[in-house]
Length: 407
Image (cartoon, rainbow, N blue to C red):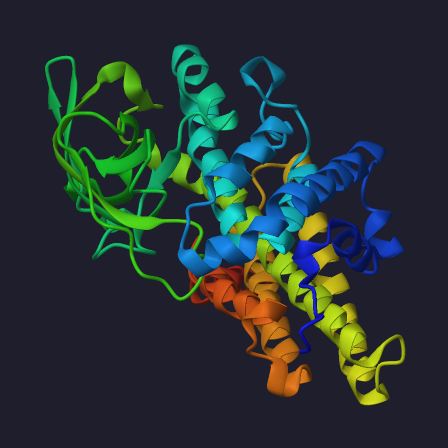
């Protein structure tokens, strides 16, 4: 690219105009007036306050606190939470549309953003009124950082085999164990920790707790060096006989499994929205670079390739919005339905990013274009919130059950 090239994220007006190209009528028809307003508001904030800072934050591995705070100040952090806790009481569809916009501007910011919601949601779901009033508003206004502590070194996708234990003592529990790959784990103020009160019971022993990140016995490892998502942090968190009062349980002892299963519905909507947002980002940045190089007449072979991607992005967005709408209507949606969305949309983010680097040819890995960042950021979305292999397993199980029901 020539010296005159201006990255798309550096020009808020060009940024919004380029992304409007992918505002397909078929997808817009699935959104209510309020949901369209949320999407438009999110895009405006992202264009002016999130996207311009994204490349530098990625380059120097700077935690995107300022970008997340801008989203909080714009009342975007609590979309699915009630107004009396600092939310806006919006739909999962509105949340998915906003997540897509935030990811298109900065995927790492979207990872921190969604983790705030993921930490707050189990408290809303299963916590007392007092716990909710104490912990949810600070997570939604960005004054506290939150983490969801499930994954362990030897227990990632298999939640039932968690080794972190919670031992009953007078007035509460003592939690001991370690967690890994915890987003915002190096700085979290509020930790939703899943531990077993009886490992012989498997999933029936899993219990959810709200843990103060500053409690005695909580320590953290240094942030991991990652391929992508550089403006977010991922670290180990250790619990050494950490005392947690009885009133900090979420639900009943042994009731954590249902909290996990309800929570992953939200987290997989988040990951799927990231996949669509990253696909859009790769497409928009590629189109911006091609426009700079060729003007308004891009060679046919490149427009043909872009046409294929445009159709695939629309398909992914339609799937995302349709499943989010299903969740709004019935939160007990089948795991396979959520799995289809998560797997398909995150695969989309990776595959579109790969194809965009090919379309750009020799310029595909130039940092100033931003497409190589989409490639790096998209890979982890296929891994976290239940690997895509696990999603295929869930989908396959549902297919087998349906076949068995026919016999």
